[in-house]
Length: 471
Ligand SMILES: Cc1ncc(COP(=O)(O)O)c(C=O)c1O
Image (cartoon, rainbow, N blue to C red; front, side, top):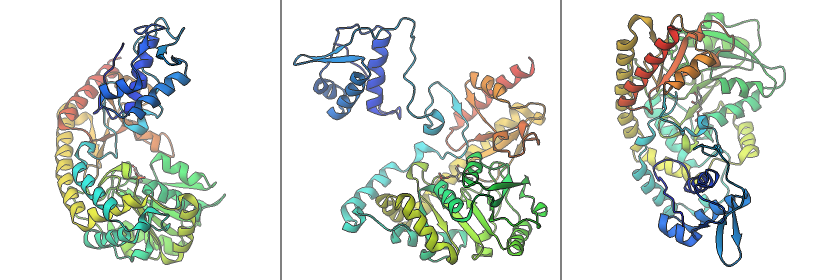
């Protein structure tokens, strides 16, 4: 009988590993038709997993015809599932690697916007979760309110007051399923077919799509190394809002100076429009002093978006909106009609994590880790490329930008780089107007990459670029 092994640290579900393993063995002919598989009970005991997991994997293999059950005598490899020359390829992943972060090969992925996943405070989070499950009031297990648990809204309000100088009442806060949902809600709330939105160019390409979905027209304003070029704001237009990432422009990395913040607010007042301030990672600031949030400068006009994806984990899917009073009621209704509310028990765990002081300690610890990784990446890039490369936007966040004059990061070039075992992200995909210089720039995320992998990844990148240039 053929037994298999599983890897609990791989991040791939156990069900999927069992299914993949038998499927591969059958397709490759390692298990021949008529060969018996262990019973689900035996395999579960052998692998120390729940029997349901094995049953689920067997049911999938059965449904796809790889195996068959013979009444009363067990499970066997079916006829005709051996395919010559299939090699070692795994079944296609149900989710794309870009979404799950799984790497099929030994690829070093400088993916921007991912915190150090191995440093998530698992034990502490587990302990707090257990406390919440034991102690939360009964109502926490029912349907909640669209604006979120009051415990979390109060904890976030106090946290923002302490650390960001943002003054708001818990009533102005709407807990969302990440900043992404907050952006979707704003788009539905304020945009319709034909509306105009002013956006930074470049801007996260998913956000282009979110704003375009209701049929709005994007009015792109270029950014420089300090962020939005506010002198180019079009005073003859009537936008619904201007979307900005003033604490750390994504992807270019600039921090918007106070003079431009003031100009932006003057523009919003003159055009009677809103500003959407997306503050997705400003807690990780290494070289510069924080600048007042736009929200603090004009709470009536600014819609502020925050997220716990970078400071705790993107898997939490918890973010929030601070809304001017005039929008609160409609935003709550829309959230209710979208998904009723964000999962309540995670909200309570997070509230406790904040109120007991763990969040600020975790941020302080992670800031040291990221600063070291940032310094190391800057130093390694400079050693490898010297004057042939320019670093931008490295003072904040979890990524920096590297410009290589003379190299155009086309899809073909990126595939060639990946063949060397390193994946980088082009800035050009985030550009609204193409061909304005971003083709020579890549994003290098270091949040979830160890120093050893930074060194190896940059070595591979240098080898790839030198091979490409000598072609
Ligand atoms: C500028 C910007 N805003 C928002 C988000 C989304 O964050 P969340 O995970 O909270 O949906 C991202 C993700 O990286 C981002 O880059």
